[in-house]
Image (cartoon, rainbow, N blue to C red; front, top):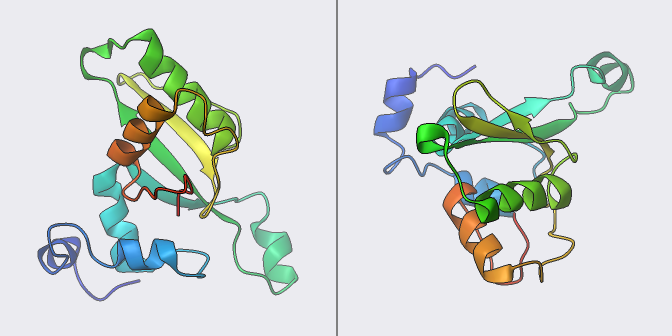
Length: 145
C-alpha cells in the first residue's frame, strides 16, 4: 500500500496521467498502487481473480490480474451502434460478458493487459474512436496495450 494519500497521488500525477502509459507498454502484469488509484478516474479498475488466488499463491505465481471497464451512459440512453460497440468490446477484449448496472452504465470484466482486437474490421472507425475515448491508450495497429 502506498504511503501517499489518494489526493497526493492525484496532485503529483500530471493531470491523472501518472505512469499509466508506461505501465501499459511494459511487460509487468499489473499496476502499482499510484497508477491503480489513477485508473479509477479513467473508468478502469484493476482486479484479480479471487477464485484463483489461493492456488496461484500456492504455486508461487503472481495474482491473475485483469481489468474491469465501466462506461457511463448519460440519461440511460444510447444508440444501437453504441450498444453494439459494447458487445464488440466484451467479445474481443474481455470475457464475453456485458453487465448492465443500475446506475446507467455497462461493465466489461476480464480484460487482460495486451489483449488484441480479434476482428478490427467490424465498424473500424467507430470501434477505434470508442476505444480511444474509454481505454486511455490506443495504437494504430489495433492493439490495446
